[in-house]
Structure formats: C-alpha cells, structure tokens
Amino acid sequence: FTQTSERSRQLFQLNPTTGEIRVAGKLDFEEAKSHTMVVKATDGAGLSAHCKVQVEVLDVNDNTPEIALTSLSASIPEDAPPRTVVALFSVRDRDAGDNGRTECSIDGDLPFSLTPTFDNYYELRTNAALDRERTAEYNITITATDWGRKRLSSQESIFVQISDVNDNPPEFTQEIYTMYVTENNSPMLRIGSMKATDADAGINARVNYALVRQEGKEQPEVSVSAENGDVYILRPLDYEKVRSFEVRVRAADGGSPPLSAQAVLRIVVRDENDNAPVLLHPAPDSSAAGELVPRWAPSGYLVAKVV
Image (tube, rainbow, N blue to C red; front, side):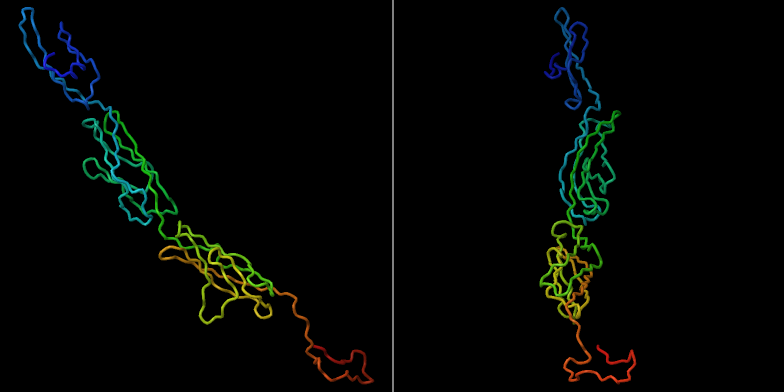
C-alpha cells in the first residue's frame, strides 16, 4: 500500500505475492462509508505500476434508534385542553436507508399521541380530557423502531404528573343528619358530627363547615365547628317548648372560586321528667272546705271532679 491512511492499513491486508486484499479489522459503516487505497506493484527489475482500490462499505442494521428529549412538562393541569404539548423529542438512527428510517409509538391505551414535526422530531400531546381524580400520574413509554430487515428498537419512559384543578364540590356522607339531645342539657354539648369529603387535592379538598343563615328566623341553638363538622348545642333546651328543629349546613372547599354543598341537620329533643303534676281544679286557693253530698246519695254518686 502507498498513499493509504493508517486506518485503512489496519482494516485491510494486502498479500504481497498474490495481490489479494482481505479484511483485517472490524469495518464500521458509521465510521467510514468507503476506503481508498493505492496499490503499488513492482517487478524484479524495479519497474512499478500503481492502481487505486476503492472499497465501499455496505450498511448493516447494527444501530438502535436513539431518543433524545428536548423539552418536557413534568406536570400539566387536569383541565388542559386536548392537543396540549407535553414533550418534544428527537429520534436518530446512525444506520443508512431503511436501516436508519424510524417510527415511534406509545405503549398502552393512554390519552396521549405522537405528532411528527420536522427532521425526526416528535411532539407528545394530549388527545383526550384528563381527570386527576381518576389517574393522577402517567408513565409513558415511547418506543422507536427502525425499518431494517431485522428491526431494532429502543424505549424512553416519560413520567407526567396531573396537577389538580378545583372541579369537584364537597359531598356530604348523608343528605339528612338526625341527632338527639335530652332537654336540660349542659351548654356547648357536643352531640355528633357531620362529614363531607372532596375528591380534589390540597387546598381544593380542604372543607369548611358553616350554618346557612335564614332570613327572618331566630339564631339557632346549634353550632357547627368550621374545621371538623362537630355539632354543639349552645344552651339548655326545653322539650316542652321545642321538640325538634332543622337547620341547613354548608360545606365549602378552599378552591378559588370555592365549590360547596348543603345538608340538613335535624335536632330531636328528648323529654326528661322535670315537670310535677299541676292541680287545675279545684283551684289550690279555693275557700271551699269540702263538697256537700245529699243524704240520699246512692253509691256511685258524683261528688266532685279533680283536674
């Protein structure tokens, strides 16, 4: 070999007697697609001739596609409209022809799709409405496959979290809560608790309770804790005056704007034996010393009636 690079000398071997050129190293199409060598032939008298040998290396599908993320939104709101861009990535295959031609797909039935853009770039977009309360996070596996006879592929996982939006109002565990209290109770007596849950997260799920004030009605004898829904009777109740009453309670979340729901709270007052009988007739201050009964009164004669 003359006028031949050192790399080509390492890859090819020339038999000085037969002129056979054989491969002596590992060829790599991605490193060099061709090699040029100059062969010098010399006879015994010292006369020589030169020829150029051009070796073209044919590609073999020995490189898997490479996925490179360019940008990624690690969190997207659950009310993001369809076609929202989540990630941008490129795919590269060092092979040539069909061996270097690639296609991409998403594993599983997910609300995302791939859109080719330009120069082997792809956009990962949403293709359906999202619901954090149903699925709060997605692990998206992207598979890139080449078109070689023996198809090679690679994968890249993208983790996307769905952020909460206040789209769920609180829900009471019951529509009507019935609680009982015995009359002559002590002040600020706890008689039960109301409970509402919110499917959202964070402050959007923080529930506060409050009585619904009604126009023209007296201040109710009941209070509801804003934090936990505990129900308290403020003052002693009298069964002989009020046997039951109802109020409405609102549960509101901490979202902006807040969402709310209402439930009915029914208080039933239980009787206690706190009243002695009262003599209505004859009047206690009556001056009558007794009742007159005829001498001839038969057995069973009505003498008087006490009420």
